Each structure stands twice: as C-alpha cells, then as structure tokens.
Image 1 (cartoon, protein in one colour):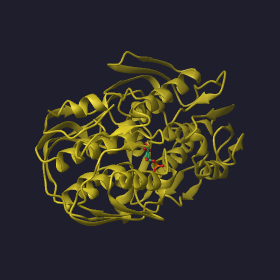
Image 2 (cartoon, helix red, strand yellow; image 1 turned 60 degrees about the vertical axis):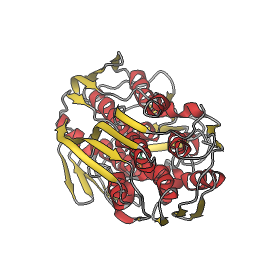
Image 3 (cartoon, rainbow, N blue to C red; image 1 turned 90 degrees about the vertical axis):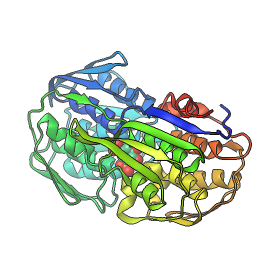
Length: 425
Ligand code: S3P
C-alpha cells in the first residue's frame, strides 16, 4: 500500500457499520429470547471475534455478510465453553463479555492478541469482583489471559475512576444477573449505546447525567437492528475532505449520537465546512448524511468532557491539527496510552517522522500546525486507527507514505484503502 497526494477527493461514500453497536447487537441478542436480526453489521475482525466467542458459548449465529442472525437463548441460556475464548484485538469483546460471564454459573478463560494481553483489565476486575465474581490472571497481573469464576452477583453502586463505556457496559451487563439494582457513575459521560440498545431489548435502564442504573433479571426479547455507519470510520473521510484542497465528500448514513460526535464539533471549531443532511433516527440512534468540503483549518483546544466523545478519533484529529494554522492543544486524554497502542507516543513519533512540529505530553499532545509534511514509512504498531489516520496525512503529504502493517485496518474497516483512494484522481 503506497499512499501519495491526490489531486482531488470527490464522491459519495458509505462507511461500514458502527463497531460498538455491532458488538452489542450480538451480545444482547445472545442473552435475549428468540431471534435477533442485524443488518449493517460491521464485518471487521473485532466484531467477528465477538461472534466466535458467543458461538463457543453455545449460541447459534448465522452470518451471510448481509445479515447476522443470532438465535438467543435468554439470560440464562449460555453454556460453559469447550475451550478458551479468543477476543483477538478487541477490548470491547474482552471487557463487555466479562460482565456477562461474571454472572454465569461456570468459569471461562479469555485471551487475545499481543495488544490485548497488555491492556488493563483491572478496571473491570475490580467492580466485577465487588459484585461477587473472581478472577485469575495467567500471565501479567490484571491482564488477559484470565479466568473468570462467575457467581451469585450483588447489585453495587460503582464510582468509576475512568470515563469508559467498556467499563460501564461490563458492570451494567453483570447487573442483569445481580440480586439488586446496579449503578455506575462516570467522571464524564462515555458512549451510551449499551443503555439505548439494552432498553430496546426490554431491560430497565435509567440514565441520569453521568449515572446509569440497571434493574436485574429482565426478560429480554430478540430485536431487528439496523446498525448505522461508524462515525469513527467516517472520521477519516471528514478529515481528508477538510484538509485536501479540492474535496467534496458526501458520507452517507453516519451515526451522530451526541456521545460520539466530538469529531464533528472539533471539525466545526477548526473552521471545517460540514453540513448535516437527512437527519433521522434508526434503531434508536440518531443518523445523518454528512457533506464535507475543503476548508482552511485553524487550531483549537480538545479537552475535558469532549474527550470521551472523540477518544478513538484523536489520531486523525492530530493529523488535522498538523495541517491547521496555529497551535492545537489536546489534553485530558491519558486513556490514549492504553488503547490498541500507546496512541500519544505512536501519533507523536509518526507525525514527527513526516516533518510535523508536535510534542507529546502526559495526557495529550501539542501540535504547531502548518508545516508541510513528507511521506515516510509509518510504524502502525498493528493499530488500525494509526494506519487510517496516517493515510489521511499521506494523501496530503509530499512523496510516498507506506506502512509496516497496512492490513491492520481489517480490525474495523477491511475496504478502507479502496474506499479512500476511490475518491481520488
Ligand atoms: C468502546 C469504547 C471505547 C472505545 C472503543 C470502543 C465501546 O473504549 O475506545 O473503541 O464500544 O464501548 P473505552 O470504553 O475503554 O474508552
């Protein structure tokens, strides 16, 4: 894969289904009664890991690439797996499934790839242990691979030290199996797909400010779900369209849930020309088509409550900042260090290698934009979002940009390069 400057970026694009919503559709379908049918499911490696894990837990799932059918067996229908569950590269699979497994009368061992084995799991082990489950780590403490001993769970209130939808969702899912109400308060509101979708399946979930509360032992019923396009995948086309000098891109069917739309707020604050068209609600989630046009970008500050609403988009926001006039400050984003790679270090190193003026800080980055960038070989650290963010940089840089591991985009967007380069000439 060799990326070079494109004379123009024009056309219409439909990005693949939302990763967070796709994972949840399979998980919630598996523990509901009857058939759940999902269209627009993301056929990326992470979501396929979730399907494989639930198949191992005895759930029949059909996936013909058009539709995923999950034959749910109800809250208490999962079976002890024959072997170890493999979550691959997926933090969402590992952490959310652990919440469900904490409530099962059997033990399960979960592992994943080299990146997953380094990511912090103590953040779910602590609250799930407070509820009554127990954990054994088999290699590094508080990391995968680990065994969950499920048990009789108690309802708790948990003040989460991190704004993490994976932590919140794990606890809420365990709360389905508890003996009393369970609630979680976060320091800032993280994505709320679990709350919205679980309610649709029949659970009693309340959201008040940054607190979510769930009642135990609901009867959940299979649903028909249409997954909107992933704003985290649309982000690369938003950034590319704004930076490139001769661009006009219509991105169709993008989820614009306010707990996920920080990239659009930042793009607008930077002076980006963004128009929402055809706003609608699909399967309980707000959706729009988004028109993006070439813009003169100016620096901004990205911090505070905004961070959880754009946490996965920070690599591409840093790329936008490198092309913007002035100094952009990204702060309050320590969580970047524990994503698929240490995204503070990896973004900083790669942007520096392309000629940008960027400094890493403990909780973000400072970028003095406006220097011309040149192509180089990007070290992806097998992180899909690094490969995609630096494709956007490469399209707007002098010379050629290549990747040590271009195929890592298959985690969330298998046809990314074709779709992006298809807009060029
Ligand atoms: C996700 C939540 C976020 C995000 C991840 C998907 C989810 O992680 O980075 O890609 O689907 O709940 P955290 O909850 O750890 O912030």
